[in-house]
Length: 257
Length: 254
Ligand SMILES: Nc1ncnc2c1ncn2[C@@H]1O[C@H](COP(=O)(O)OP(=O)(O)OP(=O)(O)O)[C@@H](O)[C@H]1O
Ligand SMILES: [Mg+2]
Image (cartoon, rainbow over all chains, first blue to last red):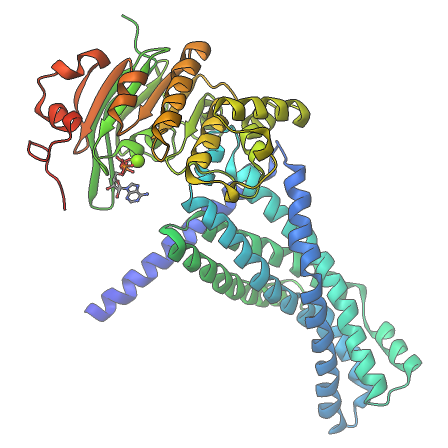
């Protein structure tokens, strides 16, 4: 009986959390995206979320592309299909690994930073102070962060795609002995426009998830330094899980032909 | 008789099983200054946050100019909040902004003032609270506790709101600076004609600032009257509090 009660209360609290996140997301979109807009905040966030994430996303993509090329080569030789390396690297990066790896890395960087910043503002009453200074915290804090993440993630993933493919190209042409021209030709022949756009659409959705989780957990943190720490952890964990779940859902619903 | 500017009627607020406000009734007339006294943890700050819409009471009515504000949401609430200013107990300065941008925040964001003009006003307001212009461009993290409090005060009065709340404005200040701040509050009330509620533990400050004084105990107002009658209140709670005696009806939770 107590076992069932535990499961029951777990499910109830899960559903309540889903409800709260949904209401927060609705408020964030409706109130955050309506005027007045805070352009200064938006530019600030684009720099912080997008520009400052470039190194980490670029490095991740480079090594992922390189490792992917090695793996496919090892697997491919068993079936005499080494020639597929370039095209599978390109497909894997643009459709799947580019957005997912970038999404997870940016979650670690950005969702954590947003949750810590807004969490500290919450527990030191800075968010309350905003409302007494004629400024709606949703518009001033949440809106610019979500918009900046949705705008910058596709750009980041576009760059990650290029660097990832470049990583595969360098490994392929140096240690695997592929011909430069043939590698490039195979890549451009196989990759279609939709392979790239599907990844960029995913990226925009992931950007929304990352900023939403950072803001939600930051806004609802309570109880001093410990509460802010908890908010940060929750933002990263829930952001990562939601990204992986959304990735599966988007792949299976939208992009499978 | 017209209704006072701000009216609280039977306000109840709990956090979980903890019943903090148990029916607060109080009113402040237009342009008047109410001082709220009471023990630590008695619900003074919570009362102000209920009026500001930062906390939602479970029961009761809060009216400003006769308009019910507990059920306001969205942009109607934003608009109502634009009429309020507040000095938070912990100052609540924005640590991502410099000192002058903190003071000018309500002017730039709320009143859409140009930064150059707002900066000049911010520096004036800093001078009024005894802070020099050399502090304008530093980060609030570099200030002492009392200086943060004064920056918070300058920020609250800069947009010249019609209603201002001060949560312990003189706590953490030396007696002389405390008196400067008391005068400033009295003065801004007179000059702006603002309606104010001030929370304080400092009886000298309460007598100086207050037209009326209300005492809160265990989530209720136990006494409310003109400031100059507080010594003749014949209320055992008030007498114990203003004389700081350990014996009396107030139970001290240790
Ligand atoms: N957000 C909150 N969550 C839970 N409990 C709270 C919260 N805010 C206040 N309380 C509780 O409400 C009670 C009243 O708090 P409040 O801050 O109003 O006290 P106060 O009268 O301002 O005291 P002080 O003079 O020390 O500032 C306290 O017991 C506090 O623990
Ligand atoms: Mg307090």
